[in-house]
Length: 358
Picture 1 (cartoon, helix red, strand yellow):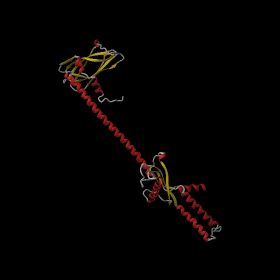
Picture 2 (spheres, helix red, strand yellow):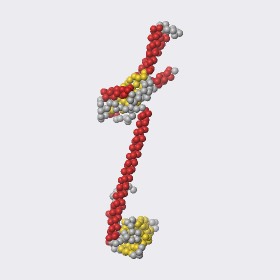
Picture 3 (cartoon, helix red, strand yellow):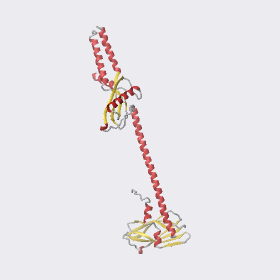
């Protein structure tokens, strides 16, 4: 029975109204912590501490003044707790009132009344009864406290700046903070993505511009020599298991007329840069190619069967147009002008000289 009474007593003592708290902050650096401050007050047991009411503001003002007086102006109050049941005053006050009340009742029943509860000394009995009832009123009051952690600050403390909230408000603020951080993070990612896309778009624009200018120089050179073709690149793209050498050629019709047949004589070179004139091959493209600045990509499979080949050169061009007229070019100097120079090739493949990750 005593254990049950003790549990109920403690629950009644400490189960006061919900306190108000400041928004919890991370544990500060130990060297920045100056100490803690607390103040107390008495109030009705059922009293509520709410934001904005005079009782709450007065308790906070006392807390601020005590902190300023003890630690100076350059401080901050964090992790405040306002309106919680005082852990020392309330139990002591109620325990004392209980002892006095029960003692007075005991005296009244043993010293100033007979065994049947009839007063033998009316004045003494009334006095003890009055004390018992009076101490019972103590249980309508309890002690409340406000406390906070005091830390160093680079700026002076502003009175009235300590804000406290209910548990529900703090939870909502935390939820709002998380939502705001998430939104800010998403907006940051979106902005970074947009900036990157804009950057890449500008890069592509500049690259295409440089490629276009480089290609136009090649076209102009071809037209200067009345060549129907200009070559952006030609290369060996595969040597198969049977030593079959396949080639690719990318070219532009610079003639202003539609091409019908293209004949190209290819001179191969081996790995040690020796030419193999006896192995010169003629390849043919049969298709209508209208005049345009667009590049035509074409491939021929197994032009040679020699795994030692490394590259080749064009030593003769013959073109037949759709009107059956033809052009032949076999001048080495002119043929060298109909392809990109080494610098032009580098510029065309990587106009801005960017380091690209593979």
